[in-house]
Length: 86
Image (cartoon, rainbow, N blue to C red; front, side, top):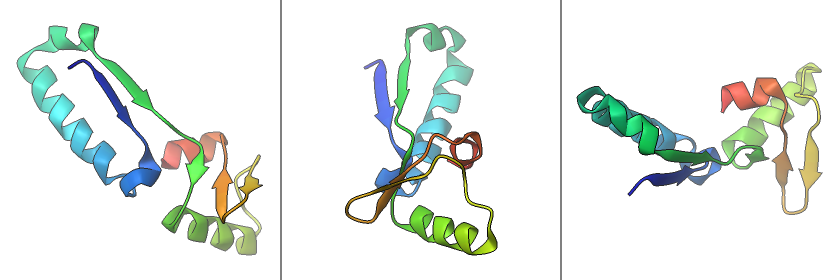
């Protein structure tokens, strides 16, 4: 297996932390493995806890730029600040 895909809104980012720990352990044993890995990280969608964060930022007047309000209570952003937080 060399293709791994994750998205922070699937488990609040916990899956990415677990994947990072596993990759760090595997790469410390075999650094050449990095040349064979494909990591796909979907970014941009905001759901759940992240949406509550947006509402708080909007109240403070400091929301991320480029927020798109999607149907169903979800949001989308490719703002560098948001991506860094992800």
